[in-house]
Image 1 (cartoon, one colour):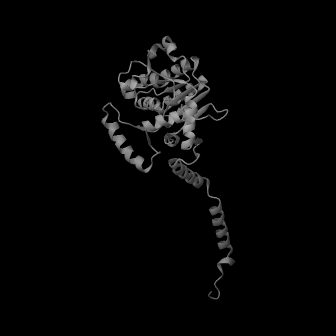
Image 2: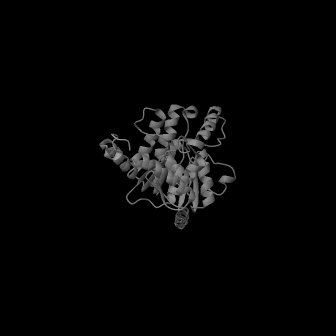
Image 3: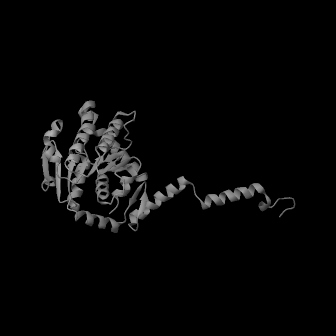
Length: 295
């Protein structure tokens, strides 16, 4: 070493910096741990090897998931679906029929649905403006799935509020009175009853009112933009979905989620044992992606 040049180990500033780096290496920041944990969770989930954690939720392994399905089937439970004609509702019904988790499936809606998909289920036609007259349709179900929803463009402001908030709340109350113990609600990413945005505020109000009903278990799903092959012709929506489909290749859980993933996540969540003392579950878009992949 050249004369007069201090040794790196004798420089207090360098020693302090070395110590700081050692601590950082030994104890990564919270944000770093979250990023690494989430990345590891996705890898382990796809491999189906063990229990992994994403968000607040425990995502089971493949073997555990199969065990949950089998145990749930043995309970011989029944369910109903509100909004079975919608994109998520159709995927949900298809998954229910494929997995045969429930001994009876009832569709509750404003009209009878035609087609092979609906041939092996019961259907109850109701007038949502006079829902109390159809209280019997909500009796005798263990689990209720609510996928009701419309748009301001289709129903107007008042119509949107009636369908997405009032019909949802009224149906939940009749379901609770009829013996339903687990109510599953499809809401929206960003839903908040205090939001400045009309859509998110109405969705948040619906969530609050359903929680207030007092089910034994209430599960709220908050998907981002739903990716689906919608039957209705909506050019702007079609273009948006194509764009989001590309974004999903890079950031799969950020802005969108396929409707089939939402349906699969709902069923996987319903069959999983709940946490002791916890009545309300809120699943955000990343949770839906993770749980929807559990096989």
